[in-house]
Amino acid sequence: MEKALPIGVMDYRELKEQNYYSVDKSLIIQDFLKRKSKVTLVTRPRRFGKTLNMSMMYEFFDITKELTEIFKNTEITQTEYVSEMNQYPTIFISFANAKGMKQKIIKNIKLQLRKVFNKYGFIFTNWN
Image (spheres, rainbow, N blue to C red):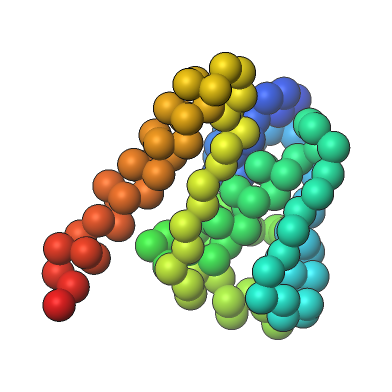
């Protein structure tokens, strides 16, 4: 099967499962873990892969996933940090599509927050 260019793809799982051409940037995860920062600010120009890289980190860390297959043959699996895979509760919110008029931006942000609440809202109903 011929590989396609991932133009406009911002989801790491889609990138790997649909067999797009890709460059392995998984060592960003190692850099992130070595730094041990409480806060990390990711600044890059537009169209530089911020959302895709954050999506990769989400897939790597999220405890609700069992996705060792999409990280098969990546650099991160050859490091000691592979033991961190799928070990943490992780929330990933992208505001990449929050652009345009103010009302549209607000609507998009509310939609993203609603999705997260729908996924994890059960925690609040069982919390004493």
